[in-house]
Amino acid sequence: MKIADSDVLIDALRGRDPWRTRIGLEIQSGALSTTTINLFELMSGADTKKEASKVEDLLGGLRILSLDETAAREAAAIRRELQARGLPIATADTLIAGICRSIGATLLTRNRSHFQRVDGLAIDPL
Image (cartoon, rainbow, N blue to C red; front, side, top):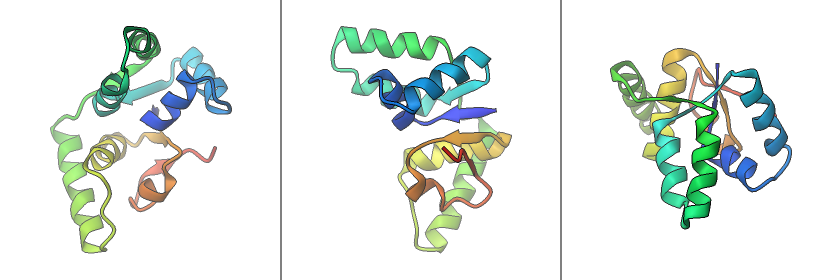
């Protein structure tokens, strides 16, 4: 399973390749998901009705994964691990990583500098 981070979804919405094409292909394959955290980030950044409509259209093609108990515990473990190493990341990123790692999903993101810090998190090579 692949989970799209907000940054690549924003690139797709703005028509920026390679993510516009990649996200389109992943949606067509039915294999792409995102998280409720990413949904929040995207919807809170939609400043107009037109932007909100574009976001809703994109999200309509994705499975939206919630932060369940297992993912929350995984995110807490990630936060502790990173803090112990002196390499914390934003809370939202920690929650996204927790969801991904708890189900063994691959994260599609441009934010490698943060997510590469998370041991055991698969990140797409694009």
